[in-house]
Image (cartoon, rainbow, N blue to C red; front, top):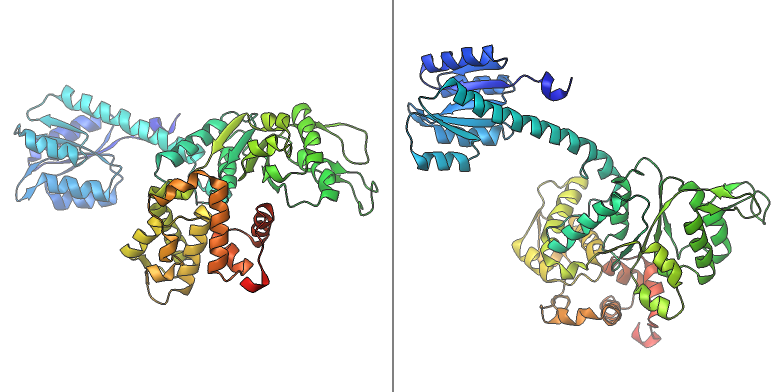
Length: 465
């Protein structure tokens, strides 16, 4: 028997006419419901607090009190409870107000038993749908506790762009064998989207393995991806499974895919196409079924044109493409993200009364955030740690007037390469060419900053330090 069928609808009738409440009480009890009756607000409040009432039958004309006030309070105290309004007066203004306050239905006295039964049937069906939806959400929702543990809650936003990204991620989750390429600037949350795709898919109970394609030394690349046999080379003291084998039935997330050494790309392509690998030092093929989600903050098409990345591998990895816009291109997401991070770190650092000054919010919404969401997160964490009061102000954030751009300034951001070079040079100068401070300001690691400086040929002269 389903949960809905096991649950008997609990109904409370609140009306000052005792004969009316007694009549409905008998009707509901005989119909298989659990019924309660009250003739005053005080009696009703006691019953509401002591029982799990699903449905309230409420007369809006009660002596000494407006039934709409009761409706308003009830919907605040018990938002999941449904309310059917009844009245001997056909005042349409009252009906409209009641519906706006959350009433489910309206009946005018006198009404037939069949009328209230039909209204309850509609309500019961609605409640059952709500329960079924809640069960589904608890099992599958992206805000379930299981998923919250797997993903970083920085994926928050209200902009059409980020909602579209979320929709694309769910579509990708529904096709667990399709490879996905995620593009976007550093700090936009590419790995977070990859985790949402994996943990919303049929592969969610299997491994999600995140690999930084540029962080593995070239001498160990083949061993890391394909595994090796004990004794196959110096240092191979035991058999080892590679990433492809580990991710059997799961997801392999390849970050910074554009930085993958060219000589490895052909082997990655073959393994992805055939789903068969061979460990270093062995000849026996091993079958493995994995999905690849890759990510890059580069213009990978230019890497292809420069012969730095294989076009055939790009086609294999780019079955589905998701692009995450920079935070500066969706400024309406800054405030909800900011509020979330303030709440999160205020709780973490035991500063529950921490709040944001309106001027700080205004300044941050205008800020360009070259490090995107990661920069906002780091900036908020630092501000809460260092703040001496319970109010976060503009001065608590490293947002200087020249860091705040107008909408006209943002037009130049279409050339991401030029914009990134300008941003790195500007922040380096502001941080007196201290690489660690610059990386923190940009919301990236020092190693990532050094790679970008090398890529764009950004050097620091001794005279500048």
